[in-house]
Length: 337
Image 1: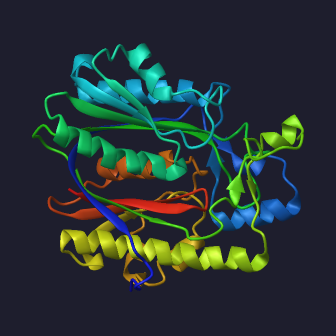
Image 2 (image 1 turned 180 degrees about the horizontal axis):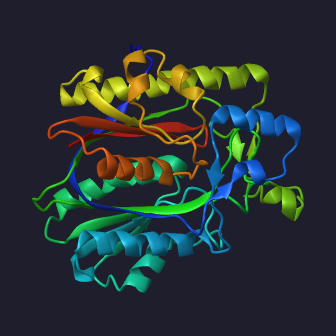
């Protein structure tokens, strides 16, 4: 159960999902065919991951493709988009890009405002909260198009930093205040770390004053100050995940047992029992496909889209999508079907 130290920020959304678009570049690549040191290969086998994706295009290019697919699926015209929010998982093609601006230009969204959120895998979920607030404040402006992209293949060696495999992909979600059929995001919640929030990093930025080689500067690193700090973080992840579930269900006035599906990122099936240790009834309700490499913020939208398409939930059912970001934070949304 949630303790007094697990203070979680919860926001009401009430925004209907008009469409989800997934862009997987090219054909899947089998991880077993990638040459890895034996120790890493054995470790990755435990995650259950089998395939990944790669592209020579930038994350902004991926975002534009996902945005286009999402808009086409929604059936909404370009003039009816009031805001575009981009939430890149890692870096953008030129570091300081605002992908939302590129999406606006490429799709001709002349009436849309642009916003970029640099919040890792949580960013796309946090963007739903911001988009829902926009819909309430300016209901006549139009729908909100939210896009996330992950271009990890250029930021890790052989698709992995050792803990699990990454890949390249993008996803979009359109939310609207207009009435209609489809699931509704009811609440958003987040819980942030109190320490070691910078353990996952790419060693470039204004805090680095020494020269680094290009190869090292473009690789993701996870660097805790001590083994004790890493253990504390792993325990903290469980607490933050539990706190989100309790807070989201509490806000909706339901029980965790009312949740029919849980969407977690594809970071390895072995982490699920630990994360849901305080909610064991939800372990068998995890609807993530851990055969896929981690695709950053794309993951939970990818799995949600597959669930809605392949296993349509009963009307009135509930699901929850949860994700960590950069060892700093967990965020999640509660969805009513």
